[in-house]
Image 1 (cartoon, rainbow, N blue to C red):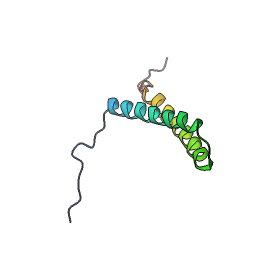
Image 2 (tube, helix red, strand yellow):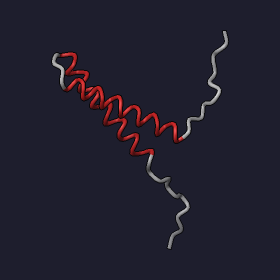
Image 3 (cartoon, rainbow, N blue to C red):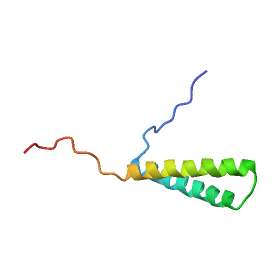
Image 4 (cartoon, rainbow, N blue to C red):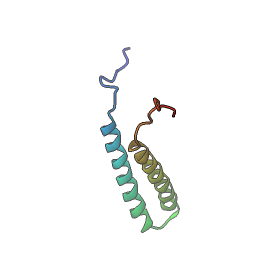
Length: 75
């Protein structure tokens, strides 16, 4: 049986930025919705969506950092 291969394995920086923004949007939507609900399952979902928002925010922040210049000349 043949394995399916992905034709384009290279995900561009712009795609990663888009995925991070979508992840933040979805997680903040779930966070807001579960903030108005009550129940044990809702509390757990609220906590996990908050953690996801933090993760997506950190990823988003790291994607916008300038690339390090390894060829810095010593004075």
